[in-house]
Length: 305
Image (cartoon, rainbow, N blue to C red):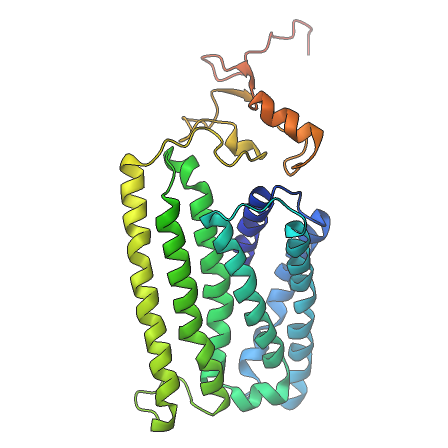
């Protein structure tokens, strides 16, 4: 579930930090490694019911999957290092992903350890870990991608002030909701219960406050989306000055995406290079018109085939 979000994050961080992705090939190979290892870790959900000998291989694979994930984290940090970071809403959600996903990944290493997992199995510690990985990870990256690509989809910019209000309310509300649940789980509070011991009350109240803040956070987002889609600032073809091919065409794209044959950039992540600067200066011009038959407008080859 997190791999598409990771792809979005690589795009957002590179564009809004104006730097090539650090260790691009390692990032690509780590995605493949996560995809393969992801099929080999499912047993860590069942440590309390597996035979003791069967727990070992799943514990090993659950720890190994942290290696390609760590490669991505450090590559993204390398991308940010020394970059000309623009703190747009998309970038804030991307940075939010980084911080929350790292916290979720750390608790994932805890849960890959069999003695710890047996102790906190089916407690709120697991609930906290799951949400730090899936909401703090996937959902924040999806929001980053939405703010990044909304101008291309609609031709209009989202309001940055409302977007940043959405981010901070979501980020703070999420942290207040799920971070206290780590301590509830360590103290033994099980999940899926209706009535709990009063000693868990203060942390549960804090968690409930966080959910209320997250509920409020969705309001500026909805207002932003609907108002911007109708009367938002016109985006132009390439408001982020990105180098990937989709930003060459109009916003929103016409039928069949391009009205001619696009000229691809020399390097889709070549920010800070002379070639990338020259390509942006040229506006990514379309090379050849498309004929009525859908061809590229090329002169037919008269030679026999």
